[in-house]
Image (cartoon, rainbow, N blue to C red):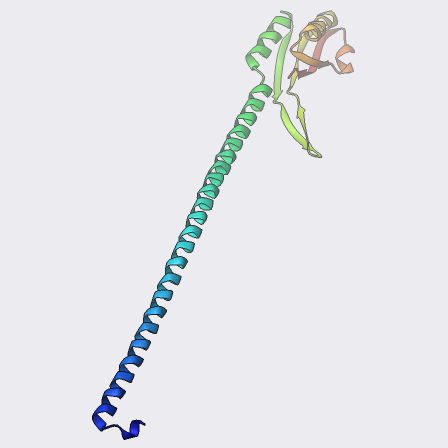
Length: 186
């Protein structure tokens, strides 16, 4: 039937068809762009929510990490303080030891050598063992009785844990070269 129409009508019908086709294509393009924009907006909203959730998780993790770091610093400081207290507790005031020795030493005795070994810690099978401080004295005593009174004075003193005189000290009755080993109380 188109063939029977004059060419100007044919041309106007083609133009109308082209115009309708163009309108349909434009509507389809508009609908596609509209749906694409809705999709992008919903994706943006979804990703925005995910970003907020991840930021909140990151803040919580940073706070946890900061707390963990603070706890590590506190543990380190506590360990340092504990070690300092241990060292301080093991420390023997040599002034008190000298004062006790001069109080207990009879006037006629002479101390010639003095040796001090501080206390120390030894770890054996994950167990800390404290070795007490030791003091070794040697010198001269005019008689066995004076040396015996010195021994009794040292044993009576609470500063000394153990007092050890070797048997060779008791052989001579006069002009005794003595030695004594003392373990100090912690």
